[in-house]
Length: 251
Image 1 (cartoon, rainbow, N blue to C red):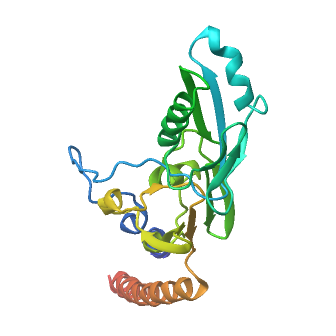
Image 2: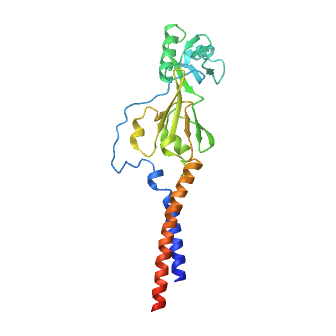
Image 3: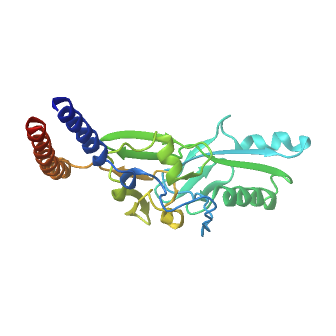
């Protein structure tokens, strides 16, 4: 009977530990099943903002004009910092408004201006972000994600971080970004497929992902709940064992 009591205690201990963190609390995209299809409403392309760093390379598409491109490139790696007003200052072309444009729009605009002003008939312009970064403050730790393809979703960022531990509050994960001079915050919950159509699901450069861990009060509250349940079960188990022992003695 003593062995039976020990096994009951061990079993209930395992149940207690496994019950503290349930799949419903931590699993991703719980409402999706095989074959689920979700229409994503918005296509995303990053727009240029103040303090972005742009690598702009201008070349000629024809060999006979290759030397004409050199005045536009002040160095082999032409990196321009967008000023607070959303402008850059380029050789030959001067000050150019870039804020609010995508890199493809800026490429087309620069190529069109170079043609119209007679600098080159067949310019080739390439614009790339050099500072597409996502900043993560999750569970008391900080991490910077360098995005090389200029496109990053909320789930991709979580994967690059190595995922979330079991103590991160899934219903309180914030994405914070600057919009028209103001910091805007939205909460995204990776347990639901609703995130796919959230306007902050597709991240922008310099976004912040902020997620707290369960605080001590929540943990203690859960522990108190489970401790109370554990005590009740233990009392019932002890009663059952005692009855079994009495019956054994009587027999």
